[in-house]
Image (cartoon, rainbow, N blue to C red):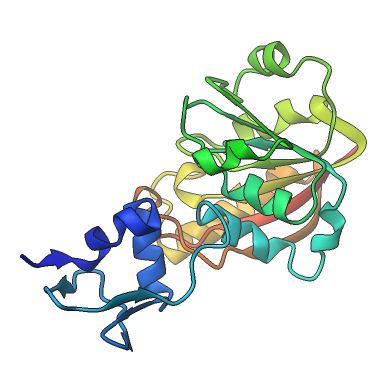
Length: 238
């Protein structure tokens, strides 16, 4: 019985999205040749090999890696709050680059990859809506972090970023993943994306200094209409 390549790899990769990423990244070989076609039908007798596995538990790790290209040593020893932790891609990146501790929070329960929970430096709390300042205080109390990362879906960063200032140390910074469809209605065409970015950066101006920004090397998923996403490294203004 034949089976699609992406489905065939689920057990090995851990999820279908990871399997698709491996295939599209050219890390899957079928009968000695790279196969980038996720719909390829694996036949009995086919030899399927993964050339290189994932460095991170989700593709979020590859996104944030781009922002810290050449400056990942800045992460060593930091305390990090990961808002919208999901499977833990951002958290995994921080831990692999020497963060002292990472506290991941998400509105969803049980979404984090089980592999993350084996690291004593990592803590996860689900059921936290970062749009609610009161809810953040309830769960985080008087905690202060060197760095906060934000990767949220279905809401605008404008609803979340102001709430996070309270939980930063005096010299703390914020990493934000900008997703155009959640920042402007119909934000999926190039012109829409640029308009959304311009509006967002104008909104940032009085409240946050942009230290660095770059496009994500990985486009948004189907829910984000495959748009180009952008990463921002921010510092709250006094």
